[in-house]
Length: 91
Image (cartoon, rainbow, N blue to C red):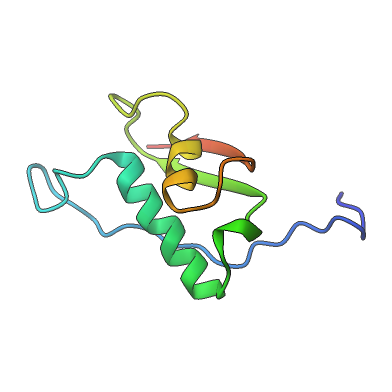
């Protein structure tokens, strides 16, 4: 349970559009799409990336996305790089 001095708050979430095999999103990497979703969530919450302490990224297929995709997506969304991150893989 978080303390009153350090509350955990989720202000916004965003997702990318559903794509199809070799469709319009195929030139983009998973971290490119994650960065776009994080930027969208920041815009909805009227926050800057400097305000982010932790970033969660969800992904369905992990093949070929490289190392630390959640950290890379957060950094690409201008969240700095000092925040924590977590990746959730679920089919």
